[in-house]
Amino acid sequence: MDQSNIEEIVRQVLASMQGRDLNASYGQTPAAGASYAGAPGASYPLPTKAHVAVLTQLGHFDIREYPVPALGDGDILVKVEGCGVCGTDAHEYKRDPFSLIPVALGHEGTGTIIAMGKNVKKDSAGKDLHVGDKVVTCMIFHDDPEITVYDLNKQNVGGADVYGLLPDDDIHLNGWFSDYLFIREGSTIFNVSDMDLDSRILIEPAAVLVHAVERAKSTGILRFASRVVVQGCGPIGLLCIAVLRTMGVNQIVAVDGNMQRLEFAKRLGADATVNFADYPNGIEQLTEGVKNAFGGYLADFGFQCTGNPKAHSNIYKFIRNGGGLCELGFFVNGGDATINPHFDMCSKEITLVGSWVYTLRDYVNTFAFLKRAKAIGLPVTELITHKFPLDQINEALDTNLAQKGLKIAVMVNQ
Ligand SMILES: [Zn+2]
Image (cartoon, rainbow, N blue to C red):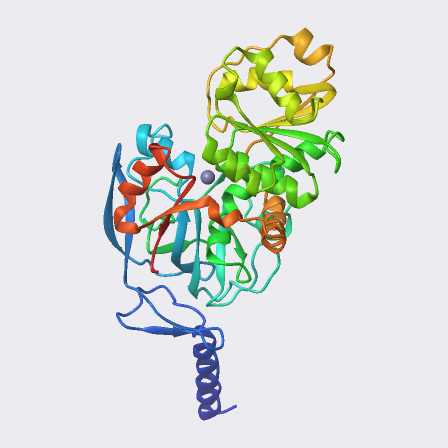
């Protein structure tokens, strides 16, 4: 082989590599005004700067500008469309219990892939990923990233991080309250291009309920014909009702102290509601109220969806002998609850399961739940009662803390 042949081969190899490299931005900050062509019909200008809402002190976000870091071969750049405000964000905003300040918050987000490294081919459920696809993230595994691709059976989120609760680092684009999110290699990501924007914003909180109902089913007590009491009608309790209804459970009683929430509980599938404010004379009277709502019966199964220890003590009274209970209201430490082990558990033979967060498997089921709920006409996306632009994120958090509305969302690039 003579010198000119070698040169020709090298030239061809370089040309083909360049062709492939169109699918990645390699190790350089993209040039201003550069654009990227990926999936057929999709073309996105590559940003050089991102605007991130950073919680810089208790009760205050600043919008900070950071350069968009260079993408590695396994990284993805997402243009954010929106992100829900979670109770966890409100805890961070008020008290910083995880000592993360300064932190980029926002974990209930969704957006569009605008660039990705050459090694990115599939999402965490095995679906193809392209530039232009709508995605959500789940968790980031540092120990064994392979598990995110090949094993959806990981039992708990322990040991994993999530975007929106990461310590600040030199990437900075770590939370969904931002106009761009940098998704690093080893993250879980799902292609949800076939879902509308508001449904995508509700995936993360809805996954908590899909997981709780799976935990409840493990008792063998929750069935189609079961009488189910759901205590607490914030976004979590309301989504619980929608999941149960979508599965075919149709004797659901919702318990809360807020009429507006109880009315919405009915629209999401509750057959009857009990406002505990109408029962000021104690738990015996309230129990009668729940029993009447079921036509004279106690519940077969209960879901406890408030963070109030007193509510945990109360819910045992609503459940029949041999019934079941899923406690999911305490994502963080809410204090101790008192029960009477003889009356509440032993003599009743209650089967109790706890539920916390979700697994990767639950995420995939959550997509099915949200699509099915929409198909049967449940107004799940009406849970989002308030929308704020990114530069009003402080107002968004204050609205959440004032307990106005149900789910608050921050909308970006809209
Ligand atoms: Zn959340």
